[in-house]
Amino acid sequence: MFGYSMVQMVRTHAHKLDRHLREEVLNLYKPFTWTPCFLHKHFEGFLKWGRKMSVIIEFEEGCFEKGCHQVSEVMKQHARNSMKRSLSSVSCHSADLTPNGLEGILSSCHHVKKVYLNREVKALLDIAVPAANAKNIKRNNTVLTGEGVTIAIIDTGIYPHKDLGDRIKGFVDLVNNEIDPYDDNGHGTHCAGDAAANGPYAGPAPGAHLIGVKVLDKLGSGSLDTVMEGVDWCINYNAGNPPEKIDIISMSLGSTAQPGEDLMVKAVEKAWAAGIVVVVAAGNEGPNYGTIASPGISQKVITVGALDDKNTVGRGDDDVASFSSRGAKDVKDELNKPDILAPGVNIISLRSPNSYLDKLQKSARVDNDYFVLSGTSMATPICAGICALIKQRVPGATPQQVKDLLKNNTDLWKDRENAIYGEGYINADRSIP
Image: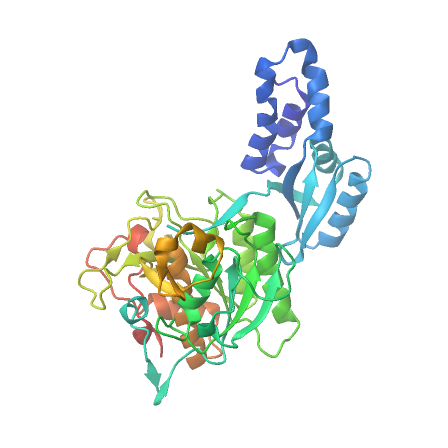
C-alpha cells in the first residue's frame, strides 16, 4: 500500500494534515481490496482527479492574503478545485480540493500551516429560570432584564416569535442566504427563547436584543467552515462599530473535539479576545468521561453542562443530567470542563411553527406557541441570558470577568467532581455584583 502516491503524500506531509483528513485520503483505497491489481493505477488516477474533499486551509500568522493568492494560483493548475469561505479572523479559507490539488498545495504553498477536513457540526439536542435563581433580580431598585445587551445566537436561525417582540435586531443566513429572520429547524428559536423570551416561559434576559446567525440547516447540521464564518461574522460586525455591538455569543452546537489544534476553538477564542463573551455547550455524550464537544474544550470560553432540576425551584433534588458531557478524569480541576451547570432538562421555550423539529416531535408542543426540549443546548443560552444581566449591571466587564463572576458564585455540591459538575450550579443572583 505504501507504493500508492496518495499514501506517500500523507506520509510526507503528515504534519500538515489533521488526523481526519489523513484518514479520509487513506480510506480512498478501501475499494482496492476488491479491485484487480492491474486496474489499481488507473483507479488511483481517477480518484486523484475526480474525488473532491471539503477542507479548511490554515495559513501561517500574517500570511493570509499571500497564502490565499498562492493557493489560488496552484488551483489553476488542477481541475475541479475551488476556494469557498474566507475566514480571515483565524487566517483560514475553506476549499473543495481533489487529491491532486491537495498534493499541489502541500508541495508548493509554503504559507500553508495545516489543512483540516471540513467536518460536520450539529445542534446539541438530547421551571428553568426560577431554578437558576435568575428571575426578577434587582440592583438599585431596578429589575435587571438584559436591556442594552445584545446576544448573538449562532444556530439554525430565529423565528420572529411574539415573545421576542421587536428585539431581533439583526439576522444573517450563511446557509440559504435569506434576508428575513426564520428558523426551518426550530432549535435556534428555542435557544433564543431560553436566553431572552418575554412571556409565560421567560428567559433570564427578557429585555436583551438578539442577532440570529444561521449556520445550521433544516436538519440541524452544518459544516465547520460555516460555523467558523458565523463567528467571524460576529467579530467583523463589531469591528464595523455598529450602534449596538454583540456582547455575547451563544453556541448550542458542536462536533467531536480534536486533539491538539482545533479550528473551532481557535475561532471562538478570537471572538473572546475581541471582547465578546462566548458561551458554548458541553455536549450530550454523557455519562462517559472525556466527551466534551468542540469548541467547549477551549480553556477560555464558558462551557455549560446540563442540570436536571426535576422541575422544582429548590436545589435539594437537583443533579447533573445523565446526558451532559463529562470532562477528562486525568486533568487538573482548574483546567477541566465543564465550567458550570445550568438547567437543561425538559425546558419549555419558543416554538417555530412548521419547522423540522415541530413536525418531527409534535408531542413536544406546549399549547400553540411553545415547545419542550432537553440538552446542553438549552443550558447554554440560559447561561448566556444570565451573562446579559451581568453585562447590563457591569457594561465594561471583560469576558474573563464575567466568567469569574459565574464560576465564583455557584451553588456547590459536597465532594463534587469537577469533570462532571464544573464549579457547580449557576446562581444568577449571587453572580451579579
